[in-house]
Image (cartoon, rainbow, N blue to C red; front, side):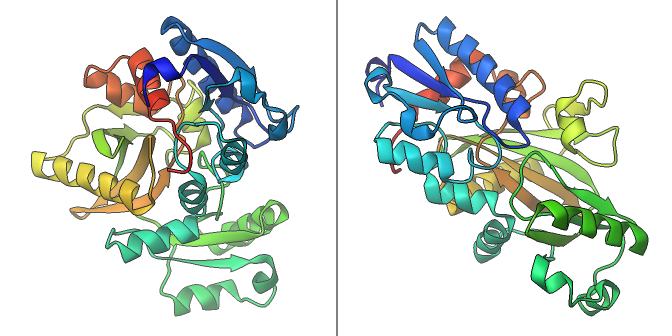
Length: 312
């Protein structure tokens, strides 16, 4: 798309998910950047209005700054498609598949991308299951990871160390979610890779002060994680993880910007998940990676905007 086509930009932000605050922070940062680039900006918050009320006549393009459910799982995207307004980030199917950790894992495995072993249970199944027997049968040992199957920003993710924690966490998660994943815990370095327009920008390493890079580590300064840019990898391995992130991006049919989260352990990269709408806040990783390689935040936001399209 040509910059001249996009003059009136609608930034969609906020929403009703558990990531509302992060979405507002992302939206505000992107609004500031787009105003510097001389775009005419308006905003829309689906917490207060239905997507159908977006004014097509006043909107050339949508900058989707939503995070979490109904923002990056294909719901918002389906409305944008219905309204026939170009929008940023991935399309309906790619967004849905990336948000659903079970579907995305299956796609990664089909594409020979290493991901931690896992199994899932829904609310109905859990009543009939003896956890310890199931874990033994599947050769899962503590610590292990338990998380919702379709949540973002590490919400609900827990590292479980014993039987007592397992039962408590499972009961807690099933009060809020219909399906959860049990995943083998992978140690080692936390590596995250930004991809834009099918090309990897770079890889950053995270050293959390907390047990892992959870919601607080991502979005609170008090629990701020140490960022090492570029990631401490040998050149060959650095190139390898960039190519893996590009492969994951393509395998899900993504467009615009994505961030892939890896663990590097025993000389192997394990892809944990791919985020189709990475945060664009002051603590966010994609802008930090881009900045290291000479891409200013304003240019990065405009680059994302200009890749907007319909049904791509």
